[in-house]
Length: 202
Image (cartoon, rainbow, N blue to C red; front, side):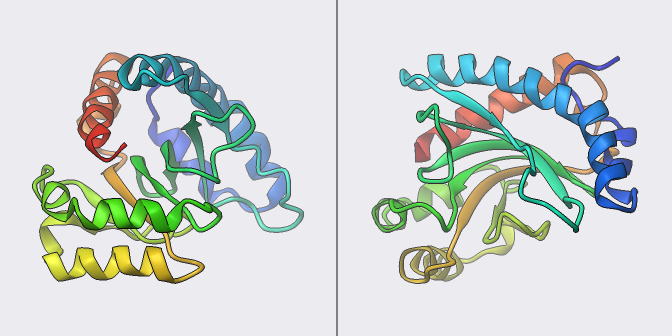
């Protein structure tokens, strides 16, 4: 059984109706991989950044009715949580997996981060053109960097700074058919490459 990479069976978990049945399947098939990825990449990111990183696997504990549409493991330098600061994420929706770095609306650091990244738009635009941007971590929609102008980046980062619900995450997404999801070794090497690329925003 794969220890790290996501399979087509994992993506099909999000087709299961009902909170309890979907959560049972998620806990059985996906969560062990997220925990393994958490262990592997908390160590990797600690080495990469020089700052100790901690893994936070999504528990979906507050859900009482609606089943989750995605799940993830996030990494931050705070052992108690990740939402309050910029962080790395690995996870999946029903139609794609992702590896991203960014900041979400709960973070009190949003304005400082936005100011820093507004000065780095050209560096973001020079990232591989198959990288994508998400402006809402709860929705699957992402926009390819190659389809965004300088003004699009500036507008998105200004929104991050000025709008309470503003978010900005950047990274890569993988359809279930992507060859990087075929083996653990290939998937781990791919994620290492992406995190190293995203480090310029850290």
